[in-house]
Length: 149
Image (cartoon, rainbow, N blue to C red; front, side, top):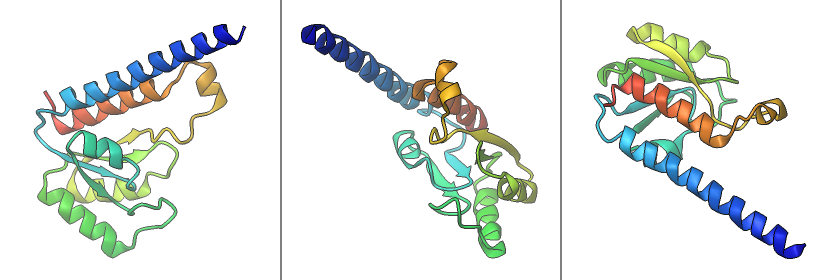
């Protein structure tokens, strides 16, 4: 019985490692050729993603989503985004999008949501939502916004 459990765990571990490698490869290939390289988001929750994709993270409120950016910080973010021709400002699905709306309106960009995975619920899991499926959705949205080929 222990051998069956060990075999099952080893098999699942291999499957999951393959899923993660698939996501990593998708990031590498998807973001190899993009018109823009800037990801403006509500806060800096996507560090690994932006580093892996060779993107520039431009967080509206730094690392902590609980800190509201000042008017000066919003203005500075909007200036950077405008200078870099950002077409889409992202917000996390579980956070208010007001700051993303403010920056987007200032520069004439659109707003879209991405998922930081941290709030996945049991009902999501029951419906088959996984880290990989969330990241693939994020990759599609960001790639579209950045004009990736």
